[in-house]
Length: 101
Image (cartoon, rainbow, N blue to C red; front, side, top):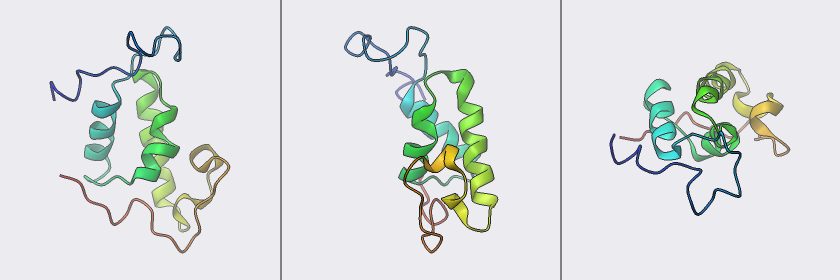
């Protein structure tokens, strides 16, 4: 965990890119989300929900979005908060078959 929490999104090289209060550690956040989501996560879930979290305080909301989307019969196709402008086809199994760790 020490290695995962070593790299903060907002750092000296990216300080101008992110808000001053951005405090998320992306590798740690992805690992935490995976552990809370039955040890499974898909890259689209990371890209569509977790990358919107720039603050640690927002992470639980992102994890809950994934959890709710997975519970829907059509998976990630229904929630524009998660899918953004590119909905996932209902026939595509997203985040259900990829197991990490």
